[in-house]
Length: 430
Image 1: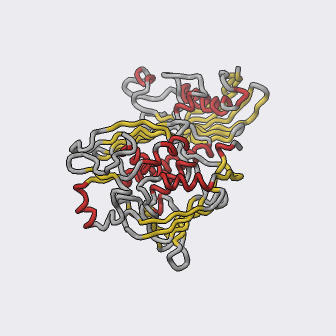
Image 2: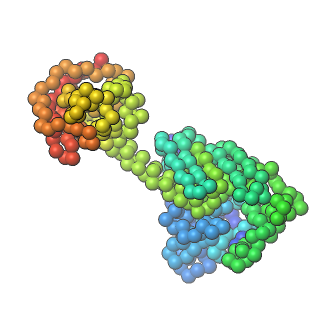
Image 3: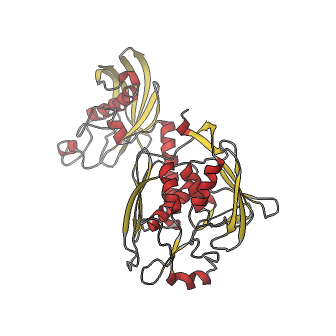
């Protein structure tokens, strides 16, 4: 277990107090160290029974100008800045005791929370950190909003900020979400709003605790009202990224991947975070079942178009059995001549496909990596019905005998559960 992959909590407790951004209510907030594996949890100390509220996607109840979570009959408003600071600094487990329904906004950024974390110090725990990461591309688009996930060994964001009326000049930024960069730049970005929105915010009982001391205000001409100006030329886009980090922490584990986002807000962040969580769960299920998609199959088998006859591996028990599939389409090369007016998949290719699935089973073992499987014999093979365009062949392979680099497997090919071909295959791996 390396230090970087261990879970962390705080080495000591710390606290702050101030007004909530939207409720305008005074609040005291305490950070209390928590055991490994417990995650982040809010405790409402002002309510009877001190109910706990976990900041997870399933507890999100609203995303209007902030992310609101609710559980056990209690809610916490505008959790994104606190959660962003914790995720940005690498805190996995913490109890947050809150005396009101909204954390203090302080200066409108996450800098004060980062300072609290640094003063308390981090403490490594005897448990591994689990990352949300997978080797697929994921995308979502709604109108002019979009977000994509690309595989990456680190957490990085490319963000495009733009408004329809160009009141704020469009900006584009790519940045890594590392603890150092978060502490030195991202956390300092304050929340911002437009002067033209004041009436709407008041009508919706929002920003009641907002002021020039905790928010960047942009007037109707696109100028920053705050006398001190911006803290960073990219402060507005950096705050959007800060919010994104906080909203993505609701997944429940740190993210590794490259996020490309355009014009997104809390609602879109949460929606995409749910997609990431679902895809991660699917990838974990695939790992448990040893499922492989086509790129993983190609990394094991030497076969290529037009002779690669395996589309996916559904499950595998190393050294014992494997299940794979081949989707038979009307575009298969062999249908051009077999037969032009009555397409039927050649029986020899069904046998070859079964052998390729068996090849994945054996070539996935470390001692056979990079080798090539060759037929030594075919026995007891029977063809029970034709395989035609639109069929989904499912191959079931079971190891009968292995001796050195040679072996025998029992192979079956099924369509909709019906056996179409079966027999025994002998092979040698060279």
